[in-house]
Amino acid sequence: MLSKAPLGFFDSGVGGTSVWKEVVQLLPHENTIYLADSKNAPYGIKSRQEIIDLSIKNTEYLLAQGCKLIAVPCNTATTNAIDYLRANYKVPFIGIEPAIKPAALNSDTKKIGILATKGTLSSQLFKTTQEKFTRDIATIEVTGTGIVELIESGKKDSREMKSLLQAITQPFMTSGIDYLVLGCSHYPYIKTTLQELLPKNVKIIDSGAAVARQTLAVLQEQNLLNTSSDSGQHRLFSNADPTVLEELIQPVENATIASLDF
Image (cartoon, rainbow, N blue to C red):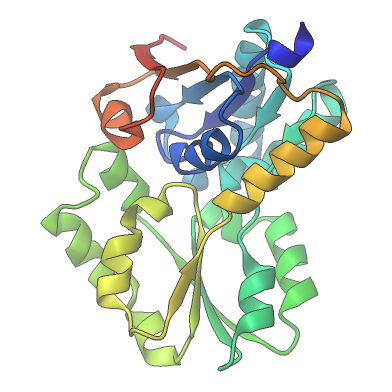
């Protein structure tokens, strides 16, 4: 039955597991397949065509595994490739965008920070979203150069990461923001360190829970929800060292992790 087919996920590495966890928590009966393209991380420094080509490759792998829906937790892949994927493949796609809207609507200082990759910040979709919701809001945009690479290397809690974030967060420290939007699926894994560095009044938000809710809505709308009472089975693949992937997803049950040459 199609309803029992897995949900597919692909990301430019392990970062998308931050979103995958939100989906698994909200939809505990769904089976999933997660594809970590760590070999090509980060997508944020690649050209738009390179990002589209990698997204096609990932999508076709997940479709070959019988996925009924594909979530793209990668902000860079969403902003650069989601329109192409939706136009060329029949399954539903769930994209992700930086949580600019809630930050802008709730900001008291009318100043918000956005931490994202170069590929996201320079995309047309990001510009459109920003213009729509921040007309009376000052936005401080910072490119998180080097963050993805450290997380992919298993150094999310390292001294090296803290030193990098101290430098990266300086524009936020001096501008009076009260919200920081995390615009990369990897960045929720450094949220604790960011909270330690930023003023106490700064709220840090990401889009993981919103993606989970949208996934539920689409499954219900298209009659694809798995109605089984069994716990979902999860298969996660990496084309690099799977150790980092394994460390990040603990303690999710019924999950298997393997290396994959793709």
